[in-house]
Amino acid sequence: MTFEEKDIIYPPVHPGTDRTFIRFYSDEPDLNSIFYTGDKDSQPQRIFVTDTAVGSLPATRSFIDFFRGEDFSHPKIEAGFVGKRGKDVLVILGAGEPFKTIESVLTIIKAALDNNGQRSAVFVGIGGGVITGMTAFAASIFKRGAHCELVPTTLLSMVDAAVGGKTGCDFDAYKNMIGSFFPAQKIHIIPSFIQSLPQHEYRSGMAEVVKTALLYSPELFEKLEKYPQILEDRKNPLVEEAIKICVNAKATVVEQDLTEKNIRMQLNLGHTFGHALETMAGLGVVTHGDGVAWGMARAASLAERIGLCTKEYSERVKMCLASFGWEIEPVHPAMKEKYKNDEEIASLLFNAMKKDKKNSSSKVRFVLQENVGETVITEVEEKEVMEVLK
Ligand SMILES: NC(=O)c1ccc[n+]([C@@H]2O[C@H](COP(=O)([O-])OP(=O)(O)OC[C@H]3O[C@@H](n4cnc5c(N)ncnc54)[C@H](O)[C@@H]3O)[C@@H](O)[C@H]2O)c1
Image (cartoon, rainbow, N blue to C red; front, side):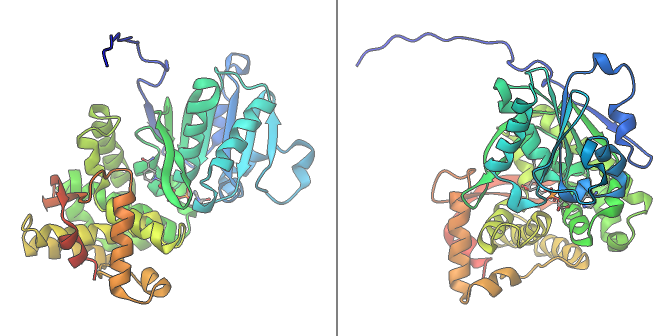
C-alpha cells in the first residue's frame, strides 16, 4: 500500500489553559467575596459544582443559600439540586467516590446546557478531588472546551488533585478511566477548609503530603517523621507550610510535564499498588490516600527486594507510614475481609495493576525510590511483585 502524508500543525486549542493562577487564602472560607466582588455584569457566567457534604458546611452555606431561591427554607442540601443566582448556576452532586461517574459529569453538562451555558462559561468545582476532577472534565468537553476554576476543599485536593490539570471520572469499576488534561485557570486554596474534614479524609490527604515530601522535600519528610501527631493537630502551622510546599512541588513538576510523558510519572509513587487496592477492595472502601500510603509501603518493599534501596531506607519509609497509622503489611485488611486466600489476593491485585492505563506489557511499571528525593521509574517482573504482596 502506498500513501501520502500531510501534517496539520495547530496553535494551542484552549485559550486560558496555558497557565494557572494559584491563590492561597489565609482566612476563613468566604466564597461570596471570591466570586461576587467587582462588576457583576463583566463576569462570565459561572457553573458552580459542589457536593452534598461540602454544600452543607457552615463555611459554604451563605454562598449556597443565594442559589436556593424559593427553596431557601428547605433545610436539606440534596444531590441533583440545580439553582440560579443571576446568570450563574449551582449544581449539587452526591458526595464521594461512588459519585465519580460519567452520569455525574453529564448532570453538570445538562445543568449548563439547560441554563444557556456558552463556551465562555467558567465551570467552578468546589470540593474534594472527586468534584474538582469531574468539574474540570465537564469544562473540558462542554462545547469543546469552556473555562475552569477550582476551590479544593480537602487536603488531598489542595495538595494534589486540583493542581495539574488531570480531569475525569471512574468507569466500570476502574478508576479514572475517562478523562482529559485540562488545567484550571485559577485555583483558590483556602487551607482552613480542612478544619471540617472527617478524620479519615484528613488522613487520606496527609498520605499525599507524605508522598510529595518523599519525592521532593527531604526537609518536610523529616518534619513529618518527627511529628506524626500532625494527624491530631490540624491547626499546627506545619499543615499550611506542608500545603504550600506540596502545591509548589507539584506545580514545578506539571509545568515541565503536563501530560505525564516523563517526570510527572514520579507523582504516582505508591499509586500503582494503591489504585489496585482501591479497585479490588471496591471503590470507596479504602480512601485514595490510605491506598497510596499502603502502596508506598509496598513500593518500599519492592525497591528493597530488587536491590534498588537499602533495607534501612525501606524500613525508614514504612516506620514513618506506620507512625501515621497506615497499613504497611503486604495483605491489606480490606482485602482480607473480602477475599479468603492470600495467594488469590496477590493475583487479583497484580491483574488489576496490569489493567491500569499506565501499563502496556506483562511487566508492571513502578515508581520506586533509592532514597528520599531519589526516584526511579522501572518495570518489574510479576514474580518480584507477587513476593511483596503476600
Ligand atoms: N487529578 C489528579 O491529579 C488527582 C490526584 C489525586 C487524587 N485524585 C482523585 O481525587 C479523588 C479523591 O479526592 P478526595 O480525597 O478529596 O475525595 P472526595 O472528593 O470524595 O472528598 C472526600 C469527602 O470529603 C467531603 N468533603 C470535601 N471537603 C470537605 C470539607 N472541607 N469538610 C468536610 N467534608 C468535606 C466530600 O464531600 C467527600 O464526601 C479520587 O477520585 C482520586 O482519584 C485526582
